[in-house]
Image: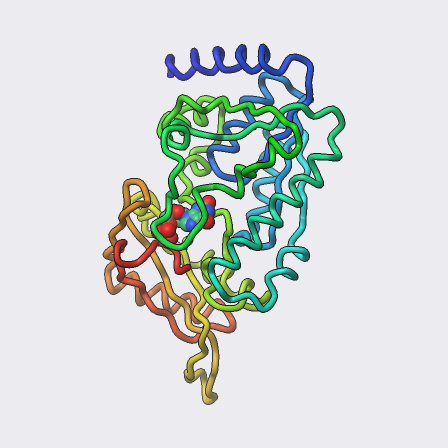
Length: 319
Ligand code: XMP
């Protein structure tokens, strides 16, 4: 694409002028915005960039490995995989209030990022994937009881706290332009087209207390559900889809025994911007087949519900 090719060159020049020979830190979340930011910076300043990927233990099946592998192998950039899942899951033990979960995760995220960032010698800049809509409108993205959009990936307040200056190469772009730029920079289409994933991750898809057992069940079930959606060619028609694990067990039968296992909720919505959403009208065949697969393939689940609530009155996430 000619326009994006020219924009890419222009951005690279601007980054070089702004940064000079100083060191830059970039928080990588695995999302499109931070990924495109990191790759642009890497093209502009190479080894002067260090990326920090904070793994809070609330990511999907194999997600951390996939992100880290893609960036190390395809882009060869300096990347710290900060596996802090024990810290996050430890602090979240016994926490069931949605707002307390978000605050706990947000605060730890900043602490952890600051710890890793302070180990990078002579860092003077922090790179962020701020988009134009974030610039003109710093209101909450979410209708529900949630923190401001991406606030914990944008490590709010951290630049001032650490005396870092901001590099925000995507400040003039809308989301579809960032995707086009990602394509121009060689990001795989499957990566660019991924559904949004919230900063607090699986924490807000596990209403009530978060336990490692529940997270493991949730990861496996979500992977089966997304596999079903892809197999039926529905992924790109859906704005966001995921499984959530409900804070209840129900009785079932399996062979000649009774089971007493978790119930799952499946969610899928269409939306333009996440502000409003309609539940996705899967066929009964699809729902039946998916339910059977999940119960057969994921130990610990014996019942599956489909969430047919739109937004409003529901939110997209369960918390
Ligand atoms: P809700 O559940 O409020 O979500 O309808 C709207 C969109 O925002 C995402 N979301 C978040 N993203 N931090 C994020 O980075 C959050 O705390 C958060 N809460 C919700 C959600 O996945 C959906 O795309």
